Length: 71
Image 1: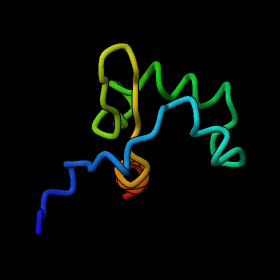
Image 2 (image 1 turned 30 degrees about the horizontal axis):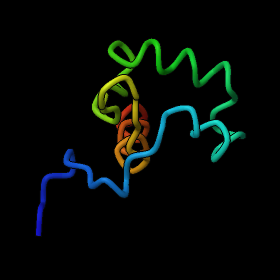
Image 3 (image 1 turned 60 degrees about the vertical axis):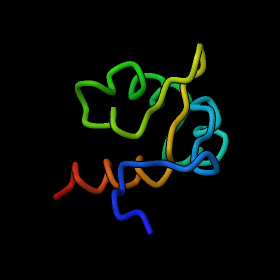
Image 4 (image 1 turned 90 degrees about the horizontal axis):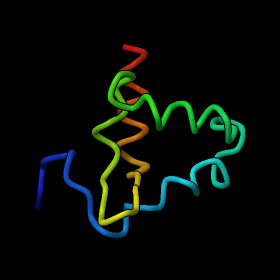
């Protein structure tokens, strides 16, 4: 079993554009867009993976990043 929480499986990666659709109360589209653009500065970068031209987010890692912001 892999104990490194920073490693994502392919099943955990979704296109970043789907986050506002899946969690509209937490991430309204404009707020999410700002968070993605500023991910290197707001602590969310480890939740993102770029594959070719597509940007994916790991929802589990995103939740961990958000939890770390509030510690």
